[in-house]
Image (cartoon, rainbow, N blue to C red; front, side, top):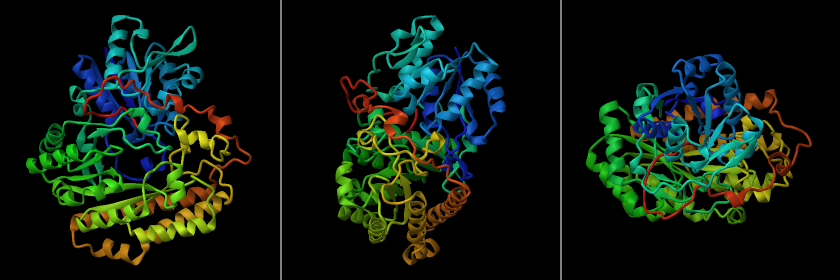
Length: 510
């Protein structure tokens, strides 16, 4: 069967402001499974070129697809663009099948199938096995109701099959790297780069996380095979930077250590960046030198907040002392730290924000990323937030960089000013400037300067956008009125079945 994978353009600030893009790992994973099943597969990365709709449709239909599979790592904020393109494709070629996958449609499958007649089928949860089984059934003319992990229409009404079993051997599926020209993807200051994934999911229970339940359980790839793949991409395609898509790659020390040792044994000079938890860094204090030898140059630490009560309420499981220690340990071993700080969990005040700023300065991270909490209907946090007012009803701006929930004490302009001021103060403090201008390690100096350039452009764009009009609504709906009742009972998207340690790639992100 002829299948075209489509990565739609995304309007989020993080996608549009930087000049650099990474390949769509999720769709490449689906592509690898379909190629190995004998299908003809093409991929159109419209996000890379920011193509207009008419050119996207022409490019997709030029490959004469029988089915078009759409997915995007933006998920909620990318959904309006996906729906628009699906309608355009159906108008141009009514007979083509439109299949949609990712986190948002996995949980909003009822609404998507009710509101978007151009979308025929939805793949729910991990996509490799399900997409391959679905395309095989369509090619043979078999009923799709026999495929687990999909949503479809039965006499016009949305229906879903049973959740697909969790993939317990993801080494059986490969990434279809041949579907893209890797020379076109750059990151970390113009270096050839890709997204890779050592593990899926996270063992922690943070109530606001939209990813954990999508993957259902934490699993990891074969450490040696993963290191071998990174080395091959470097040697054969000149890839220098590997951005880990994992929520928590270091969750188990043993497999992570085995990966570090295997990558060191490959003797390749690569840069690895990703995200992890501060407590994992503290746990691994005695092997952090291996992190650096393997090529790790920056870890984003998901600290989320500095208020102990808030951290307990959202079950983050972190502590200020551990966060500070992790940053110090990373610096001691020549690894950059980026601290995330999220507003919107509770009713911020001028006083609480000032206290938060002081705490962040005490942490002394190399970089900071400030975000707004964004509820997902399938998470426990949504149940707590369902009565709060929504001030941003445009789903395209549900990208963590726009305020979504109304604050009880601060007007949106006051909260925005605090957030932008905190970013400037943290990034422009003397210690940060000294490291930026005169860090003894040229590789880390390059990474800091690149992030500062990107951050400055994003900061100015956000300020200009806010001054033009942030699009906030007065007396907006509550979360429950906008999205409906809580869906946390359906948080686990896959049937865990009998699970062994495994590996793989994801179809999409929240």
